[in-house]
Length: 243
Image 1: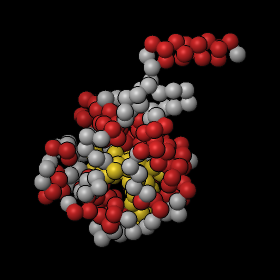
Image 2: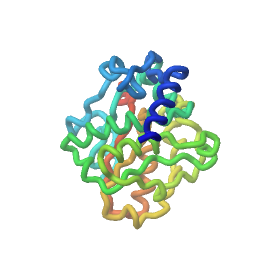
Image 3: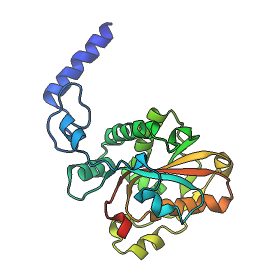
Image 4: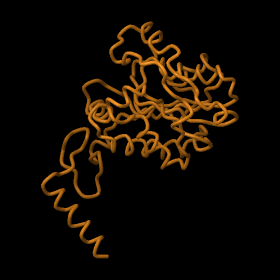
């Protein structure tokens, strides 16, 4: 009991001198708020793609891979918005709690939907190339996946798929064709037997053309693993369908 009281007191002191700020609008969070303030939670541009099967994200993949059962994104990525900054904070500024919090929120939506995400056997975050992971210190997609795992009750698998080619960041490839060639043969399935006959959720942070995810799916297809894939992307461009 004493340790709990000491911990609570230390936390109050920390909040007093180093208040937690909303990752979107930078306002000071009040008691009960975490990562995002209540106002920003209400304003987040949700896609609601988990409410219907033939959504825009699924259309990107349905004619490109027979393995993909469903695909959704959580909110729209609009450059310069508070939520695009939240993604950047997660991706480049070590704010890993953003990934877990948004991932868990997203996972609760997927658990309530009828698209089968709650029937998955494993959650697989898209891996970074080892050199990029060392430079960054973490993989942002793993933190999104951790949040999804907590909400869905589905275990993580961070070993079965590896990134064997260090590609140029997709954000630096403006031409559609270059994005596809940039990610070709970028992934390798390290343990195909762990995926065989299973339902897996592939997780990524931002979706534009879908080239990176499809490259990973192609690697799985080459192994002949008889698995089914659900795609869960944290954010996506609202213009992706025309790209």
